[in-house]
Amino acid sequence: MNSESDRNSERLSGQHVTKRLLSYLKNHKKGLAAAFVMLFIATAADVLGPIVMKVFIDDYLAPRHFPIGPLVLLAVSFVGLYAISALFHYGQSLLFQKIALRVIQKMRVDVFSKVQHLGLAFFDRTPGGSLVSRITNDTEAIKDLYVSVLSTWVSSGVMMIGIFTGMFFLDVRLAFLCMILMPFILALMWGYRKRSAAVYRVTRVKLSQLNAKLNESLQGMAMIQAMRQEKRLRREFGQINDEHKTAMLKNVRLNSLMLRSAVYSVYLFGLILILSFFGVQSFGGAVQIGVLYAFVNYLDRFFDPINQIMQQLTLFQQATVSAERVFGLLDDERTAPVKKGSATPMIEKGRVEFRNVTFSYDGKTDVLKNISFAAEPGETVALVGHTGSGKSSIINLLMRFYPVRRGGIYIDGEPLDTYADRELRSKVGLVLQDPFLFVGSVADNIRLSHQDMTDEAVRKAAQFVQADHFIEKLPNQYHEQIGERGAAFSSGQRQLLSFARTMAQNPKILVLDEATAHVDTETEEAIQVALEKMRSGRTTIAIAHRLSTIQDADQILVLHRGEIVERGTHQSLLEAKGLYYKMYQLQHGKTVPGRSAAR
Image (cartoon, rainbow, N blue to C red; front, side):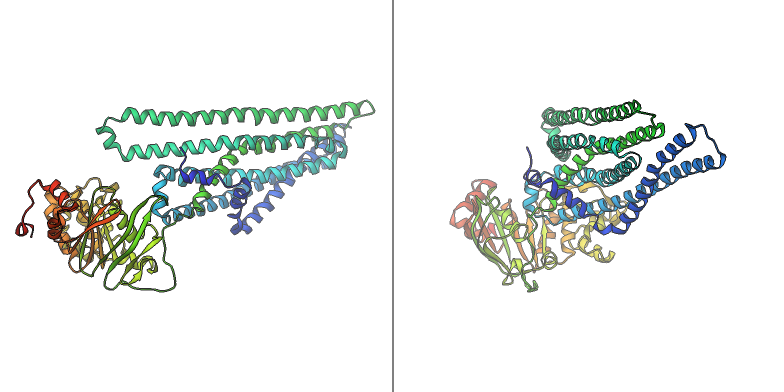
């Protein structure tokens, strides 16, 4: 059950992903250069250590020759080399990890910034939990690549080169013999990477689905408990969790077979080669014990970085698959519509016009068909109709949440897509039926789009919509902290705060998506008064479910299956006895009031 975004991310090639991950290092060239210098010094010290020991064994221990001066020098050299190795390994590791943390910090900012600019078309098809998994779990896996994998691979690679250099210095024939091991090692790496990629991809997708299911359960907990859906949710979550466990077990089996066990087998084969070489050599003369020690020591040191590289392949595969998903998100082209052209029109009057607008979310089924109407400055245009008639789609297009591809929308005679985001968002105020409050204080939520707004301006905005009455009764008044989504406030209080937030920007156009739908009776009267004040002098586009709330609208548009089937005032539509008349009857009973009552 992959989302479309999940599937798109899997189309990136491994080579492309690796190059793109490495491109994040280009701004850290000086730090990388310093880290490499320290790494080379540390590796040189590691390689020279066994050579010093070889000199001691062959030149002094074997012939039983123990001059004090040279032995002290050898001892100091041996200890000094290991001290240099430890010091510079620490320095290069610290520097590599600092660079890695800075890189992943930038990547997380890039991902979060990208999400802020994605359009609603993206969020319509991407579960919230899956998106959270991209930004947290997947970037964390990529962090392991920079922090652990790259530094380990680089240091291990340099160490292997250094060890082969030492081997060739001691015995060219034996060094070439040891190079027979390299094809086996490379084959192991290639085979592991090829087989593990598919396993890790399934693992990341299942983890994403777990997050999506968890997010859905937490968001809908009240409904789950009310409808007794706990068992169903546990069953669905358990099924995804089992699939995730199965994928992880495949990974464990693969790691057990192809990592340490297979590498240890190659190590034993190499050890047999070295011992066999010296065994055959012993038939023709004396064997240099120091060289034997050095080669066995090198072989052991050679396979230590091999083991580290193979172990890090696990993190590398996780990071590669996660990077596919993250880069798929960064490359997603479903961004929010933006301004077109170089013109900079301003919204002065607030006249709104739709001209033959036809719209489809999926490119196949039209949810709006040839919508045309005009809302003059200061007028209220109400949109009514059954669920799915297209009311919310008109609002979504006017707010430029989706691009208009057929027809046109104009504000003050200028195309909607010619307005800058700042101008459009500051002059068009939106009030939803389920207002969203952010974690923070009451004042912070009112001054949301104007962070430089004074406390006095915040109070005036609250007073304008009569929200000050309940705010001043709060323990900390305007400094009262709001929890997630304002759960501690009533629906009416949340709506009044959203009114104050909207009026704080003094919009020319007001968009109301059934602002009284979820309001409690206690605050409904205050909200109706606030709405009347808010609409005064502003062009208002209002979605209405309760027809009694829009009887004074200058124009009512009745939508049915994406088309405007009726238009007029409340009284004229009742007299026409069409769809609006039937809707009114359903809400108010069989008797339709006369003209005087309607007024």
